[in-house]
Length: 138
Image (cartoon, rainbow, N blue to C red; front, top):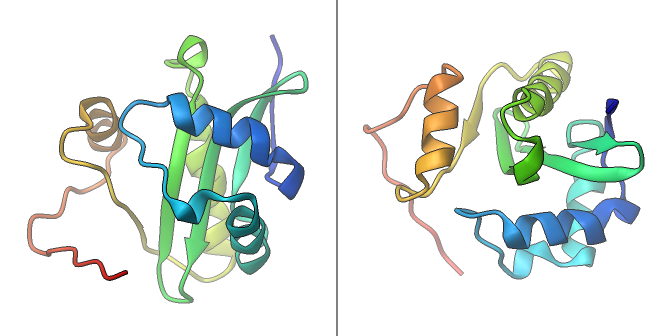
């Protein structure tokens, strides 16, 4: 098995969406259409990555920025490839790309009931914030 990593492109949408749909703790919304995926990647070039076993997409990380902070979305790895540091490598690639763009701080939003996700981020050294509230508007 040879895992490789590359920047996500529009043609990675179908396998990415398939992975997200079956990843527990992940929310799929209208922001996850092909058009939205393409717009996101074009608006945030060079900071979202996929992990591949040969030609098979096995992991994703979407990363965006508002110019001040980075934001990670849809970190997912196929079940049979977990615990192989693939998620950590995907996050590292995005963090390094953000740093090259002068962005030093990054956030991730994780559902409170997503035990695996919360454990991953805490184990990875990310600080859980209890001092802010998140508000959304549609």
